[in-house]
Length: 454
Image (cartoon, rainbow, N blue to C red; front, side, top):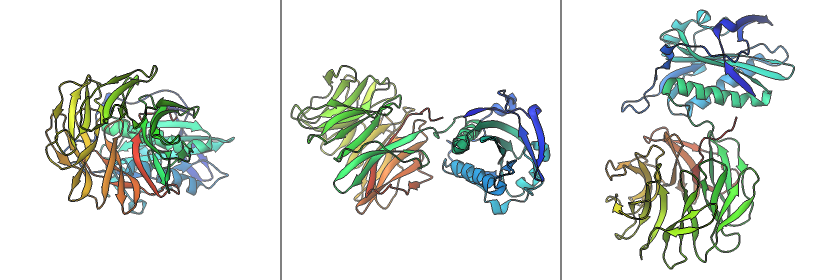
């Protein structure tokens, strides 16, 4: 699939099957002005509310297909992608006033007053055609208040690329309005459990694209993405002992990473991908070790008769957050990367565990027991700003940050089943990935870095 920015001066008008549309030629050129470099939406504002956006059915030049059906699909899919970001309120199609038959997709042909009157701030329109088996689609984002174009792109490729085209322009919308592209090009790996066995599974950010990664017929747990997104470390009982492995996602080949007697739990890749923090019980206690990925050389970091588990690097690899019961109940501690300067950061909660350092380094998410339920909390690395994020009727477990730090995936356990859920970093926009792929439970999500999916 190819793509490029569109240019208003490169537009032509076509009339086919009585439908007037505007299609932009496939020129790989940019257009715009510094006026559009502003960030429209401050998603970190304390009083942030979803911004109203409308997506109208796309115009089509395809005489052989069903113009209405195809145009509706693009509008529905774009609306769905924007809705799950948690930053937009997608206006229902039934509220639209502008006549779609007579409306175009360039500013002079749009009745912006009709959109303002129903409370729309931003508007997405588009046009498409299929010729000789090739699909060409133009997407445009407008500022309704100003009555002006913000950004636009034209993509062309195979008809089966259409979802990718929607995801690419959803990135452009996020970039134009929030200053960052979003996480449409990410995946979430997790554990699917069936009876007494479990396997690793992977899905796209929006919950689609199920891919089964393992079929070992054994208890397989704790997926951990490498920083480049090419490998996943995990633990499996496939040989009887809980050993650590690394799976190459391209070749699907696995290698044994650690196979000491007792527990071999991979926990966190270093930001440069050269080491993995692990928990080994080979010396009699659960202690934290750093293992070189290339040489398997191991260095011990903690030496304590207490239980030290769940280590995670800080984004700059200078510190490690971990869980220890050295103060009695499990609490969060931070130490320097060499194991020195250990200090406790949680003093609230009776059972704090599963810490994950945010990609921005300013927060740590973890699970804590509250009134018999585990809920998610965040805390700053200095121990300040202890804040509860979830208030679910169930246990919120195994949090994992998105690579941009805007979202947190976790598993929600109710009764004997678990599902993967996602919230915004402020605790809002709760959504559940309902499809669990035939498993009894899905759990332990691990969010990928940005990937080259398209």
